[in-house]
Image (tube, rainbow, N blue to C red; front, side, top):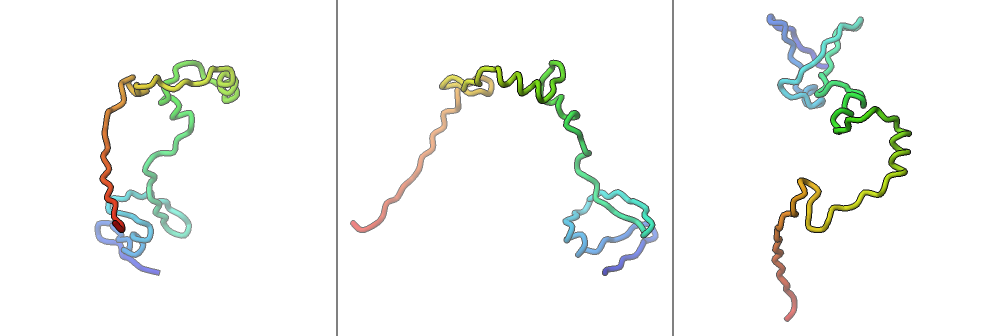
Length: 111
């Protein structure tokens, strides 16, 4: 077990071995919880917890909310999705880029 000391500014240094073991870089933020055993430091999450409903607005769908069963029912009766016409790209309906790749091959062996 390692020990540390509280500074006059209220700072505590977390030992390097602990920081490295947890991959805590400078600037890592922590939540501080007061527990009966002492304090508990927990690194903050990079992103807040979200629910599926919170992200559904990103899909671009503007109709009424559909249940999973209704989505399945509608998909079962829909025609298959067709590929884009040859020579076009689905993104911005532009022709695909015309890139050429050259490969250099050297053959060696008994002549």
